[in-house]
Length: 258
Image (cartoon, rainbow, N blue to C red; front, side):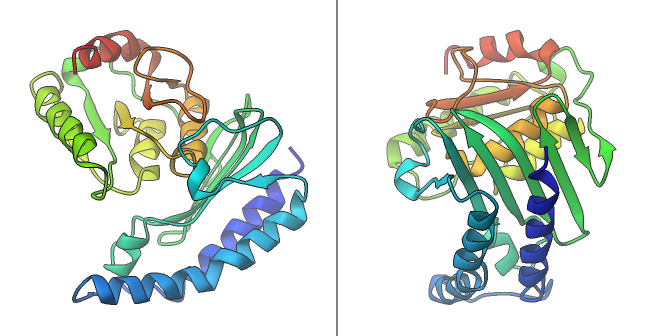
């Protein structure tokens, strides 16, 4: 896909700009300090990144906050998180990235994720495979859900009823899988599925800017992506489940009564 290389260059460019603001020694005293630091990050990349991608695909629309959990209309959409995992960057942790996906008619056509710390580049296109720094990714060979490492990513400011549902699911799954983990941002546990280092990922009320790129990476590495009813995942779906094919039916069953 002709667009892939210029998007890679754009992701690397803006990842490098953010890396200049990153320090593993960063520690913040409270939410006011975090808000101020986050505003500085956004000023560094938000508008300039959109201008750069807009030049590459001027006809594509942008997924806004209001559209993140809704079905997208026809045509092309940029689903971008310019500082995916900003809270990690601000606390000196390495799990943050620039995540870029191009969605066409509800299908992700291109995924580029650049993690500046360690200079890790992840790319995928439909039918073209998924790659980390040029090396092909493959999902886990596990076949039993009881042996699976299962991960989710849920932010802390969800509505109370959703928080309760997440907590109940975590507790129930601990008795059904080998290990259950929750972390942020969403991209990294999905990448772990693509790398075969984790075996399943689920999320309630996923935001397309957080999952579109990494879900394509996982499926191009061999995973299956559906909602928790088993229908193929598309933007606007109420939930997301990503597993290797051998685990998918058992994973759906494990979630069936949650």
